Image (cartoon, rainbow, N blue to C red):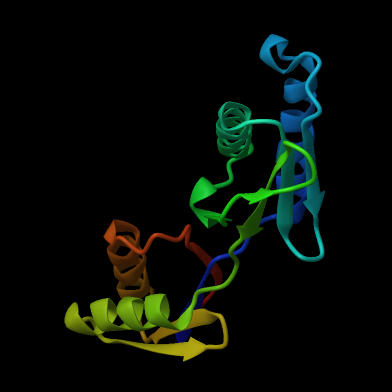
Length: 163
């Protein structure tokens, strides 16, 4: 039986590269000259920490992060923007969580879409991924094109294709 997995994973090294390039751009930009803005990545917790003076700079930093992620071929849909918090003084702090894995609601929606397509495949939820199996690889390729057309608000990848 042929199979593949539908997952949502972020390459930590590419994310680290994107954050480092964004940090360098912030240091070199004229509108951030003399600013006390900080941008750090916590790889273990998969969090991006931003600390800056005002809302305009916060939006600029977020825009820079999105642009750098796109240039590193990372989908910015994996970013989960939390609420802004005020740190000491007049500083604004924001933590951005990087979402990984396919949550249960999205997995159910993917499985429902696959079953509604009437293809001869089986889809099942396995922890934070969806495994799809079939007798023919052509059916699996049809599922991949079906899932790519769907709106799931997550960047999905298709891994471990086995025939």
